[in-house]
Length: 180
Image 1 (cartoon, rainbow, N blue to C red):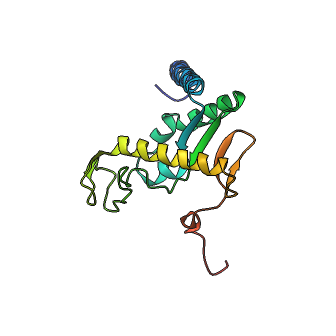
Image 2: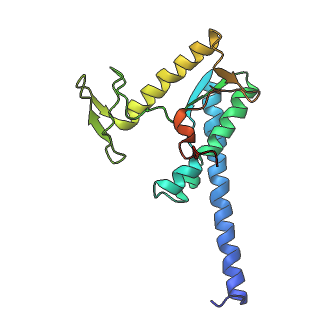
Image 3: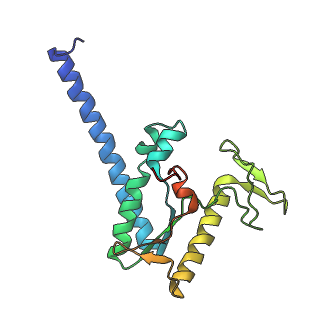
């Protein structure tokens, strides 16, 4: 089809309808999932992932945006807040995949392609995703306990999101040190 022809615009309209249908299906699924999670739990723990940086650096491209993780976090935050519950954000630099959930030893040699690994310290065999979930749950419980005991390094935003106040030292590693 040639640009500007009637067939071109008709095909563009059809593709637009398909994209809209996919977007609405994703949104509907995320609304249902976030409602189910917010009704089931008093607190939810998520990792504060920078999706924009992830899409640029890990060769995932726009596929990172298509999964709807950012939208799910927003939906969880407001639905939990409506019910007086808390969304706990764990720092993006927390080594949830690399840390052994049994002995807390960090495996610095772990690559993104490694889906299973064995802890060198205690010998426990780990599935990367399950280990990450256990570590995030433990860290979320720790953050909630610290907040309940009055830790001033945590902040509960009006949106019901509990997170660290302080910035991680690596967060500004790309900032120039010479004052420019």
